[in-house]
Length: 190
Image (spheres, helix red, strand yellow):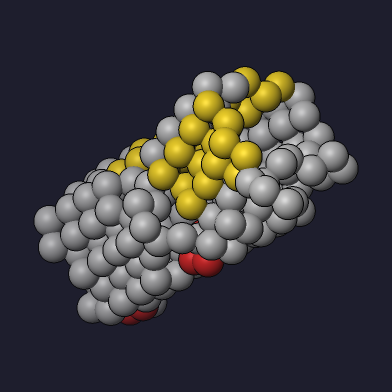
């Protein structure tokens, strides 16, 4: 079966968990209130696309190309971004629920996360340098050997990681959130 090329198309309210999206390349497309829950989007290509109000929970993104993607107010539970095509991997996350997802070893420099739930997300060995976590909940998110240089955590909350096991040069923090850098010492900060 041949792959299709779709350009400048709007998809609204589609339930692709039952009626599958045709495999191919989607460029400058808008997906609004669509259900992709548990869909297999492996080897799909999405370029300059916007996903708004969509359910992408447990979607399979193996070798999928995500370049300049905007996710707004989406439910995105349990997604493995670490299996995406790493070439040009870039996106922004705004108002999304991204809990239990993985970015293990991905290179996603200067990524913008805003007003999102990032609970129990794995950022181990990820290059997040220059990224912004604006008003994001990072409860039990894992940062281990992660490049966090020049990241902005000033309005993020519930984060906890060891500064000795991560690169944090020029990262920005505010009080009281910065106390999360001291959790390993089991001390109380008043």
